[in-house]
Each structure stands twice: as C-alpha cells, then as structure tokens.
Amino acid sequence: MWVLVLFDLPTETKEERKIYSIFRKQMLKDGFVMFQFSIYMRHCPSRENADVHVNRVKKMLPSKGHIGILCITDKQFGNMEIFYGRKEAPKPQLYQQLELF
Image (cartoon, rainbow, N blue to C red; front, side, top):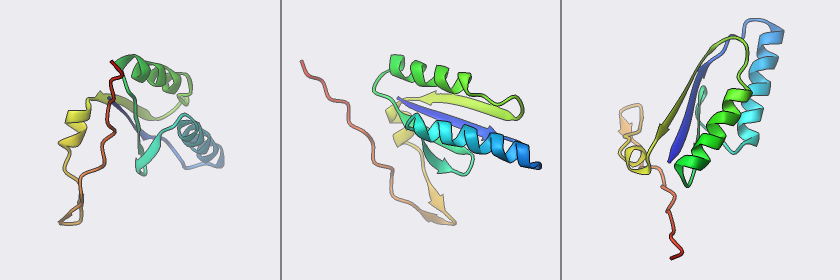
C-alpha cells in the first residue's frame, strides 16, 4: 500500500514559506520521500498502517493550501509509467510483502 500526499501550498510570504518548510520536514520525519516537488509518498505494509500515516498527515495540515491524500495498492503503483521528457524511466523498485506463516 502506498500513501501519496499531493499539495500546493502558498509560498508568497516569508511566513507561508516557513509553514511550507515545516509541513515538508514533518512529512520527511514521518518516512515520506519526495516523488516530485509537491508529491510525497510512503510505502506502508498494510491498510491499517497506511491509515496511521494518513491520520498523522491530517494532524499536521497547514491552515492554507490544497492537499490531497491518496492510497493505492502496490500493484497500482507498479503499473505507473514514469517519463523524463520523452524517455521512459525504469520502474520504481517495489517493496516486497513477506509472510511469516
């Protein structure tokens, strides 16, 4: 399961840039990695774990801006096609779910 956070926050004033920076650092601290400048993603081993991280993001939401939170399965994430210009990038490495019994 992947949690993607897509956001567009205002950055016109010094205070807004500070709020943007704090939000971004909190996301990184929670294990999210930057996919693009305003898209961060995190792999979660289960739906329950994804819900925990979605709730954490909801608690750190800034007062202004547009923020979207999307959960997708490993299979859906693996079907994503990524391009750099017209050149297709290699598929992202997927995490493997292990079962102990």
